[in-house]
Image (cartoon, rainbow, N blue to C red):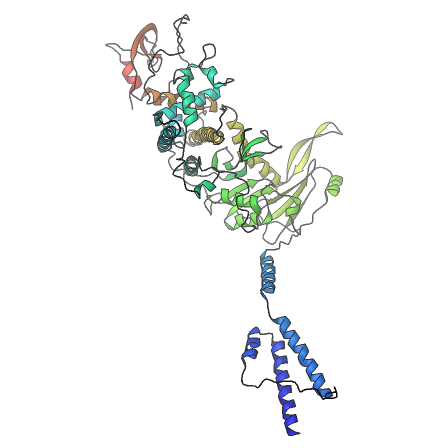
Length: 601
């Protein structure tokens, strides 16, 4: 009897320990329970032969079974651990709470960086501005790779040089200013252009177009060839580095850039909302002036296996384009609803980069605002807003239809007015407009301005190599960036001075590329046929680029019909004519304008 009482006492003590462990919830105690050897393992008493058992024993056995089953449920498995981890990761995503409260705009005064090199560029020519981005090293590398590619393709070198590549670029710029139906028309007798046909023969030019190369095909590894633009990557990388050397402006726009192309390529995309629906898509970050600071070519879904980002794929593009912006300067970034999300605004805000952009409805989680039908009842100019715990504001404004914008630094105040046409009254009315809409409309058009400028004086070559279309576009962008840098310097050095138009700037760059430091073409120029009667020479209305005047190469004097000297201020006349500069200059015992005109100061 005493043994039975001791066994029951031991059993109750064991059950009490198990219950204490369960209520404590410590998993390590469960492990200690399995490894505890101090107490003997308790085995329930066998049932009687007649199938009956002690009532207390049966009740205790049921309690122990329940305890054991609960212990088995609490033991974590690999699948349960994975589920808990996924729940934990989802919990890490920040939930934004939007309330209709007062928006507190932060201090976002832009810290202007010192314009390094502005005074050094006070005497720069358009040619020098262009060479700021398209450097001699890039041209030399292109010439070497072109020669190597010609040997690999045809068995003999084309023997081109960096100076000859410059000539090709200069001819391309003149072709953009005077566009014709085909390339051969620039050399035909009836339609020839002296700025093109006198620089290089037609066959030589067409030959170089088919052989221009930027990367050795046989020295590239298989990993490097995973980049779909590996043939153009050295040029793109060097050009991007030169663009990033320029101090950035305060406001930047991130948007898509379309390079027109209708041929066959795995990178060609179709965008029906763009002026050029077929072509290559590029990401770009441009300033308000249209200066392109950073760019990248879209290569489609590159990383399908990587984890999904909180800001989305397009948000990653904005983070990449703004990664080179210096922190702490209070830069402002603008983008449309294709890129915008609430986590993106917060990520940029943590880097002290402020953001404004339109946003889609499905990216405004937990943000309930006035319905568009209700806003239509209130009329044009009605608005609603919400502010979250991070002091970011979403504004909905109704004009012809509702538009949603998000910002981290500008809200509704101050409310301005904008003129709109009212169909009912058939008069212009003033519609209230929040400050966030005004800021977005003012600074969002940087990339669009760049697209407009690049389409003005751009000649389109046809080629089977699809990446050449991207290369010609980058050359055009380099000219536009050089022109924007020239305008910026002129505004700082002499604000009252009228800046040069892009058309004339590109013409001077083209003339310098085809003439500065280059020997004169051997043979009779195509622009002066002997059969055609020569018209009397007229005085040139435009000045010769300084790069051509001072290159000290092939400036030969000839005797021509007497005309006014280009250099004299007293209107002297001279028979001496410079063959390269195509101007009359004095050269006698009293005056030597020929030397002074070509003298390097």
